Image 1 (cartoon, rainbow, N blue to C red):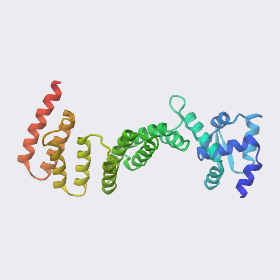
Image 2: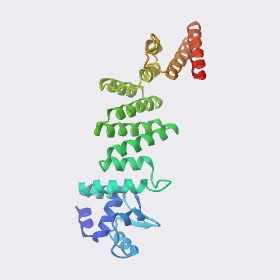
Image 3: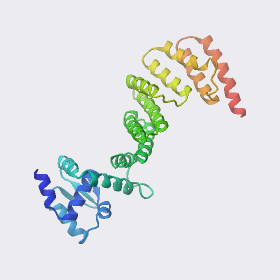
Image 4: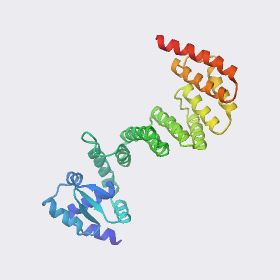
Length: 273
């Protein structure tokens, strides 16, 4: 109640700055705040009014909160409509310029909070890809999950499936086999289909991670038998490569050699295309 009272008593524009800054995070660029609510007086005067609340201090080009708990409470007090508009503004401000002023993750989170789910999904997915490439699959999985949720909110089932399969890969890379298998089950129940080859490879990888090499072999072999026209040459080559690795690990060299011959033939066909 005391925080809310102090915010209400603040200078009108200073209040807008502090509320917006609370939504930005612990450190809010003053340039962003000046575009959100143009100061009626000089910027230094308005900054002094913000600092007078005791919630923030000025550090160069940033408005910095003195206490994270207070910042969170102020963010909660921002009216829903204002919060949504502010998040949209923050996302666009952070994404402006080259290079962008903010991270893909921060921009995606703001678009999501602002209700712009397509843009949120796009930024979160790209952020997840970057983290996965840098060897941070656990952090990437959280972003792929948010991207999938955003796609579903706009009824983009194909986009949700794409994010869902990326989530499975990230969970497997993070060693969360159970989570990956659960996610694959949810995708199958939703009728999500990326490609039969990718589904098989992900399921086989999950089975192998749990020590069930026989199940992994059955999953991959089932896809190669009859070789569906939906499976392209590159995917077929990748499946054969996975089978060779599995069979060698199981000591089944003769079987591995037959699949190696198939892989060589596929490689030649790909090269000659």
